[in-house]
Image (cartoon, rainbow over all chains, first blue to last red; front, side):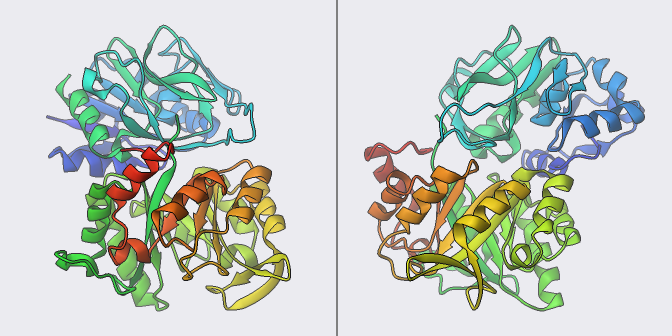
Length: 196
Length: 251
């Protein structure tokens, strides 16, 4: 299977590469539209800032390319947020694959710290990336912005409020958490994606 | 609900684990990758690898080690030691580390925190603070606790947060090695004044100490080294105990 990781100016690309290699997949990391379009699966990872990242995608014509992919695509963390319509981070117009806006967490109590960092549980999982045994399992999050629960939500997590831990529309899948850093549970989710 | 984190810390010199790691039936304790992998299997939530080598050659060895850890281990890990400038951070993140911990370099040059946050995001930047309680004041130290700075813990932690630190790793030199519990009062004060996660360090001797760091100390994570390395506390047992005590942990 040909798996491509979208190469761009964001962190954690290598973590995803390593995680896929642990599953016996040798992904190609590329920003080349032809290579990305041809792959069986595309992973769109990301740790970084929304505005500068979106800018980079546009300047490299990766924005329209990602939107028009037909094979299963997995956005991770910032990747997922950029697949939404708009982000409060840098007031950024995003890819508009998911009809939802990205908001900044606003703490309600002293113990509500931002970023939301660490292991938290998946709730109300729907099929696609998730099998039933993943309900209530812990996955690893690091983020200061979130996507509210909406019609594309396929799993929720509770921090300050229930938010979208995962989204899906057609061939587009996305997780706010990092499956590549979520131990055995994360591996299972990546395997589910590879099986789509 | 967000779980409280248990974080084993491994001191690395010339690519091997130091600090008399001593497990019955575990021969690979000197191998930081094997040891990290064991902790991950036992239920550690994150790992910290601290490079205590001083030489240039040692730095290269450590970077190679970071690559091996990233390839093998599927939980987040932080690296620290010898990070003085942005290009050190770049090198370690490119090798696969998730976060970097900076200590003396940040005290000497607070702008480094800002630079890391701007270039790589706050989530990458753990500011480690070693402080000692003296006549009622918590004072910060440089170079592994050898050089006093006169900076006060709470002021410095607040400044670090404002500059863009993603987490504070607070080691109480007063409690470190004593095994009579974490500095819970200071931890709680940090947790109540700051808005970023606090990692407790220094003083763990038994399972109660971890519980207290989370309850009275209000810490988000607890770091320990020797109690894990000497096999005095198994992480799996610790997490079962914490869960029974009503602490939300990942089991």
